[in-house]
Image (cartoon, rainbow, N blue to C red; front, side, top):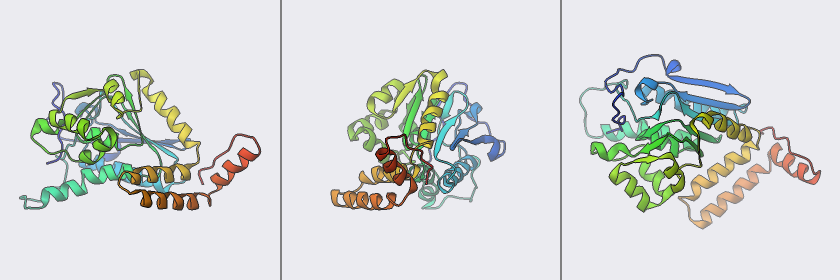
Amino acid sequence: MPSSPEDTADHTDHHDPSGSPDSLILHATDNGVSTITLNRPEAMNAVTWDQRERVIALLAEASADPGIRAVVLTATGRGFCAGADLRGAPVSGDRVPGDVARTIRLGAQRLIAAVLDCEKPVIAAVNGTAAGIGAHLAFACDLVLAAESAKFIEVFVRRGLVPDGGGAYLLPRLVGPQRAKELMFFGDSLPAREAERLGLVNRTVPDEELAATARAWAQRLAEGPTRSIALTKQLVNASLDADRATAFAAEAMAQEINMTTQDANEGVASFVERRAPKYRGI
């Protein structure tokens, strides 16, 4: 079964998702930065089927659009994402063997894969509770910023469920198997500062500084050599599953591809000419 929203006293546990996908996902592009904002604050941003599809589409658009050079993923209100809310998903009648596995493959796993496979760097600006698939959505991002009030919860065990959305793939690679099992076996709430200490968060900042910090980081990325960052992202992600020979071969090919870009030529030229590079993302 998919993850469900965190138990919260003022959580709208039985609220039917409403509003168009465009109103439930805010999107803006400015100076090469695409900002995707989950916008169901009354439900702690438990992600609906329509929201998931919209986020996946926006990440695909970011990959294809040369004008987008970095992505920020954040949310409104007190929650980053309190899990999955599939009450708006298509209903196909009685469940038959294979339905759950298919739902996970086409749902939670596609969402996480969309972040991992996005060709632009993705920053998570975690403004509040990230539980279940919400935590995995943050952990899949390339860089994670967290407000001091944020917390991460592997909520599945509280429901008697197996983690979905790539959690058992992501966490051991970020914190090692022992720490991953501790988080998943107990389902305890992990404060942002502790998540930073474990390596799940790059930096914890005061709540009021989160948006500005995310913007500053994204702008730095947007002004960088976009294709070399994309190739570096691919190399790092693939290295976790590859042997040395495969990783070295991928590195050599990435170098070959990158040296055909204008930004690589600009980087070398600026070094020789002793000036700051001006990258164009191509």
